[in-house]
Length: 97
Image 1 (tube, rainbow, N blue to C red):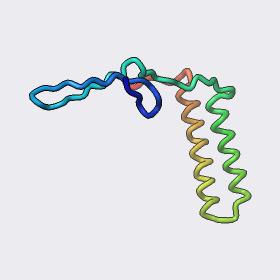
Image 2: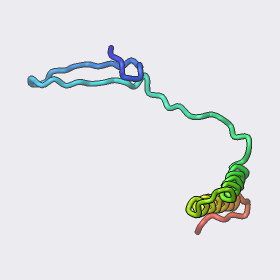
Image 3: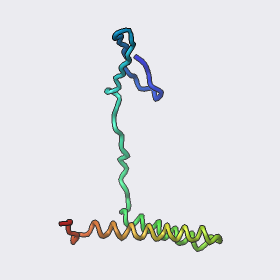
Image 4: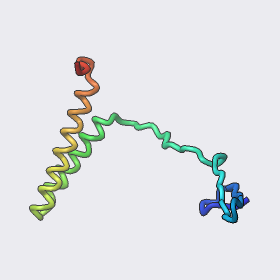
């Protein structure tokens, strides 16, 4: 038994066919998907609007025109995304034909 860099045990086997050594690796026991199971306290729409407000507030304090324009663009993107989210989750949205 051997170990991969992350410390998980792996089965490594060598097999010789026609004078050539073939290696097989079995990692099936250790492969497992992990997900972040944290629940969000606020809705996506509320978080997007808070981020837009924060970006607009930061744009008011920045002196550089380029940075200000970038922050205003970012705020507008957050607002558009919030509007799209609200539209997509509305009950009157019809599926395409």
